[in-house]
Length: 155
Image (cartoon, rainbow, N blue to C red):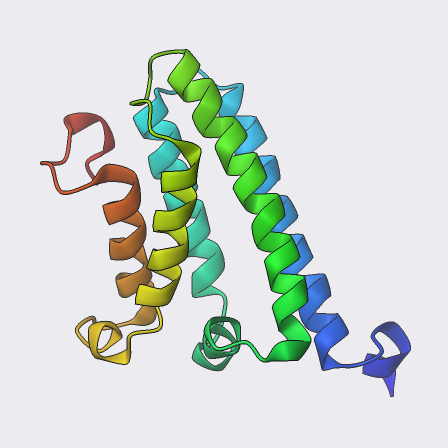
């Protein structure tokens, strides 16, 4: 009874939680933009924060997100669009300051979308001890590529 006093159903609870996570990522990004950290340090911190949020999700919730049904699809697409817009603002600023290569935004978004599809590959996910290890590797690959780790963002 108490649950339905605050949320109409499980979907509304999910939306509330997802929105909170999204807002916390945007807040963290804004805090990092004002810090004196290098671009690589900021990106490393952003990936770490994203992994922290993902680690709070149980595997069933991760699967719900990855294999969303029509009920959640529209909401997740809206949240993705908001996230992509904010991410591209961050990238554009970094490119203008010479902190990042100039890569067309359309390519970045296409790669992000494809990495979302890669995340659904069960065979790949099973190569890692946990989903978080897998998602960290996917994120590290996107943000840092295949080149050796620079001293600045080594763990």
